[in-house]
Image: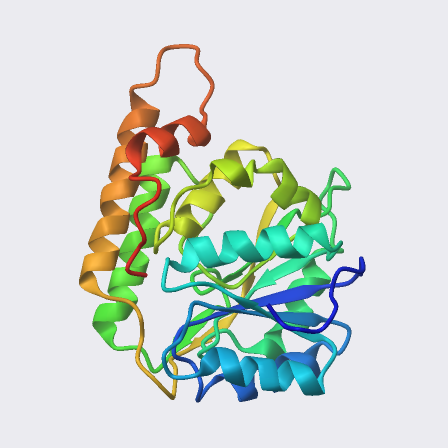
Length: 276
């Protein structure tokens, strides 16, 4: 963790940026976040990047008091990084908490619109608990992705929606804004998904918990520097988990409530580090 004293409670948005070998991308993405939402703080969660991303993050934090660094021992998966960040942010009073990729695929310039969505109300006067930056709603788009990646992503969301009975169109989206209270309501201590399926797991929990989820259109941009951490093996692992969750959901005892906490615990190898 950054050597700067950080135990005081704060307020305002926290933008979480998980990193693994993102040295080329980190300075630019942090600067763009700080420009787009000056009131936001940034937490870089580095999984022991061998390229020195963690050390660079520390150097950035030394020059900007709104930037913080959380060092982890090694590559343990995207879900594990976010869970550690949620714990860090909630413990310090940040609200809301934002998920954002380091590679530039989630343009920070679109974050003000996502934050503004938190203040909208539905017919019943309810404000959103979760705002998802969606590629698959009207107005959403993808730039510079090969066709196979587009179809793979669409298939992942469509399959997850069908298996788990979800209404969210972009189930696997990683650009998200959570109210602090929403995260606290999701029993994060029971989330054990570490890889690509983490976003699906969190979406499912939010739906079952009755949280209000809205999707805002975003333009998803393929990274310019570095290599994607996604692989066919990671996607197949996630599909396997979703399949197991869906089967457990369909065959739960009659009258039993849908409980993703139980289904996740029963169908995941809880502590195995993910390759995501």
